[in-house]
Image (cartoon, rainbow, N blue to C red):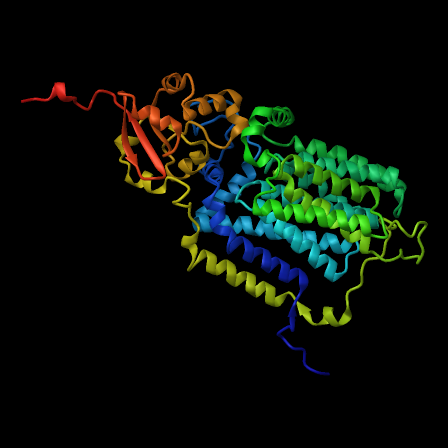
Length: 508
């Protein structure tokens, strides 16, 4: 009997995709995580407070404009995870956690495409496309939890519809407990679960279909109850509805706006949409109604809000694999143009390819990559000095940063991370700060009518804004304010409280 070789010939397709996802996230994706988005700073700061105080806050302690106001801690669990990663390896550790979540969604997407009938080639192609789309919103924030859990939920539901084995749905209620405490995107999961419930009644196929129908209804009810196991209870639903229903807040939040098809990532999305239309239009087969509903539903959500690109990539796109399925296990189908969902045969792996692949090389490569990022190249994990006021905060002295600040909204999260003792005026937590304060912020920053009243109302003593902010021009013309610092990116003005003696107060 020949000795078994320890080293494999080729990496497994799934292992290769996981390594590629980590490479994308921790390579070119890492500087972008902290070079364009400051909200991660707020998430780490909130999580750090929970770890230190061992208590989940239900009131604001980070701003001077809404201090003490009740808030809904809908992301506390993921914030604790990010803070724990920051304690271990700083921002490089936070980036690694984000990369792992990204890789999980990529891996599960590959598994889902194979379960939906895709061959190795189809599965790799669709998963690679999905990864590129997910990378559009690859930021170290809790929404990565929603993407990963949505793909896992799809896996559990597809397997249950294929096998009717109860253990596949046993994990769904606990999954929603984690989801509702990690990110506010869990209603997307409830929508996915509802569609699968409907499929058992409308499609009416699958093993032990009668039991499946009632089991999924019960699981849906338990999932809804599970989402209420959070610090806010059922109030989390009214909070999310009020935020998503506020057109003003949606309008000023870039990720909730429609995709920009002039941007490079927008062109990528457009190419995928056109490719999807081409495949649907030329395929001899048609998708089952459930797959079509998820594909078009997530695509419609993406066209309304770019934030949903990841859901389209992980929940909608894999269904194109169904178009490549072979005949059902019985060898015949009632309608040869329509796949026999969920009874279609899975694509068989080539014995030669399967025997020559292994997870060993991808595992070693992933481990080395994580070690390098958190070791020799850990310095790459830092906020970009060309985007955030890194240099300005280093040069400012404590007396110059005393009192209430008026800061850029996009810099609020970074300020909370870099200077924990400075309460912010506002940050990216728009659903908490609300429309009224957001309007006041925009009025002051743009130098609109009543800008000075806003600064007076909140007793602002200094400002931290971009150099080109219109407010700075007005402050420069006002005797009560003086320029403290201007470095091309940041301008800092401080209110003159009279402690600096004018010419009339000079002593002989």
